[in-house]
Image (cartoon, rainbow, N blue to C red; front, side, top):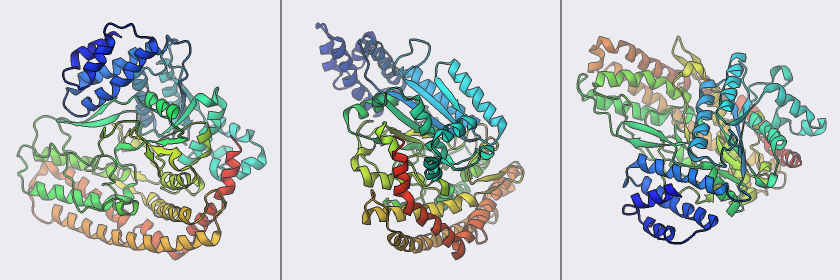
Length: 604
């Protein structure tokens, strides 16, 4: 308990409550259990101080992490350890840089907090499945190499390859496998890749069953490859990723002390939504940036430092935030330049322009979300959205699957969340343990796969029409489901006439909203082009900014290509014939939901 004593002695004058803990440490021989409990009492005090900016962050974070490691040593002195084991699944499709970053974050989490201990050279309470979904053989090889690299570092990580997935699927009786085809895929062996995140995630459940040794003391953690087990904080020099949450420890406590079946966290960092629903506010922010830039001199010291975006949870990045119950605020967010050291506005513009096309892969330069400690990590609130890249279930919770993967629609997590919340209410909970979400990596856009987004690197052209189309009909599925569960019993088959009536109403509402958004985006894009290229501002007279201006033009062209009057996705959404086809698929999926869930539930 040396580090605990040092912590109390060093911080008791600055952190209220620590002095009382210090008195309990003095003069009395504490049992191991009582001493372990003192650590538990200490953590919230340190957390509140760490996130209040009243105490120097990094020394306190080092102390905080050390206390967990010291507590783990005490827990191993007990005759038994009844805490949960974790099996994680990371579905990955052609994303080696993302997978590396995700595995590294898990390794850092285990190293710094040591949940379950590492007495045999590996963290034996944590197992990780890398659920392969790649088409490119070279990327599969790179994923396997990463698995081996992190096994050597002490992570129990397994590559769940395409052949193994297919063979595991074939173990199911043919009749059951046919009933589960929409959940687990019907793709043939020779094309058993890019099945989609939902199907690949659900196949992981079969591997979970195979790896489970004690179903009463195992938790199953689903994450995306672009998630990191850390959070972000704002500093004078920019964003900083910090390992300040002991996820496994806190989640174990939640499942041991509550009747939770499914727990979901959120995201900080890049928005967890498609660029197809952010183009309007992004154009507002870009235009505001150039408007401010026009009032400054190119060779003047950069003034775009010190701004911070919104805190997580208010959907400020979403053009249609009002649909989700959030306030639609007409406001712009300032740009925060990421360049270090002294530099001028010309350099700032050069770096800004280089980053613009990352928007089409989901990076928002203005509305990154930031972590806030709030009321702590383990306070639960009723959930209505599953964040597919950050949720945990126990064995009984494995039944509450994310359905409709065969439709390949966006918004699968919110849709599943509405169904699950209607079925188990408060046993589906949300907590303040977000993962850090990073859409892009230092490897650049060329080494990344994003479903529904096509990149022509040479031409700097991006086509997200497939994702945009899936977003509209994903919204239709979501808001129809949200209305349906208010009218019908979720544990019984939904009546087809009720489904069709709800979808017809929601289709009309969404078409009107999407039309308004479309017209606004076209107008905003034209206004941005006028401001940048036709208003005679200083950047047009700088030969050094020629490349940057071409990149800005490429961005404006990509907005026109994907959101303009002749954008393929917009024309599909307007097509009554195409909508009719999609609506038939959605109706059929909702009609069959209960039967598919019943077949799925029998697996457990």
